[in-house]
Image (cartoon, rainbow, N blue to C red):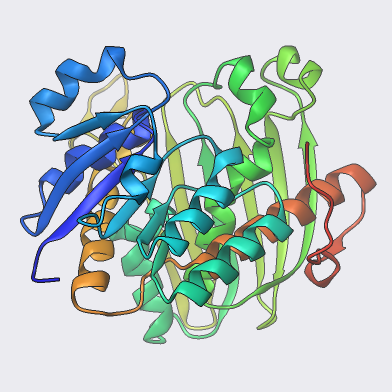
Amino acid sequence: MGMTLTVGVIGAGRIGKIHVDNLRGVSQVRVKSVSDVAIDHLEEWAKEKGVEVLTTNYQDILNDSEINAVFICSPTTTHANLIKEAAAAGKHVFCEKPVSFSVEETEEALAAVEKAGVKMQVGFNRRFDPNFRKIRELVQTGEIGTPHILRITSRDPQPPGIDYIKTSGGLFMDMAIHDFDMARYIMDSEVVEVFANGAVLVDPNIGEAGDIDTAIITLKFANGALGVIDNSRQAAYGYDQRLEVFGDKGSAQADNNRANTVEVSTAQHVAKEKPLYFFLERYTQAYIDEVNEFVRSILKNKPVICSGVDGLQAERIAKAAKKSLDTGAPVQLQSIEESSAVIS
């Protein structure tokens, strides 16, 4: 294969475009093809980015023998089938989260990947955030001792549009799923029990669409530790992303990223910059690093940092959270089996 990875990107929405930009920054990568259901508005963009082939048919990417890896950035409902087809075509796969809305579909997709012997990475970009990585390292090296409590705050600056809410799979599946993955990653232990409380406090339309916009989720880990996640669809002051691990020897916390770290103190007030406003600004480096690591894992034949199993486990926690919200009771993760009903 040489030292160049030729890539095709399926789905040129916001996230697909970000990946194209970041892939172009990797010297060993050639972004050859991009497919999207509508490409008229993409022609200028594709030319500017040096994309050689722009097509409405993703099969063109899978049938191209030059392409070694595909990025799946299309809507969630298409992921599982695309993974299966890409694996069957012998392509390595980078798939955006969640892998699917159904534990069963995700398991089928993972089986196809395993059978084909290709690599698959799931797009939980926060694993690659330098601050969160550092906290994981502190837990791994034992610096803060045995972890007892994990606290994650994850609040968006503003809610997405109602159309998105209707198809996103719900707050647990589209938003908190990042926090579920982060919980497993930081604690290096499986979640065994989930208890979720939810409310509609930001926008009644979100409730009418069948979702919540505010949540507190409590986790129990296999290693005995406890976790708590709080989510809101709307933080007036920006994108709020904080994390703390508390252990028997100490604690480690990651604060928000800001445009600068200057603090101004006067007789009237003490002020510093608000957190960065949007996930694209907050996680710029994480998006770059996850793409670099995916390329590296293929070219150097190393394991991926965020695997299909990681994707599956986060989905199972999301399902358990939804079940807990619906029943008002804690849910054992074991009860979220392969036979779990598909969320329509």
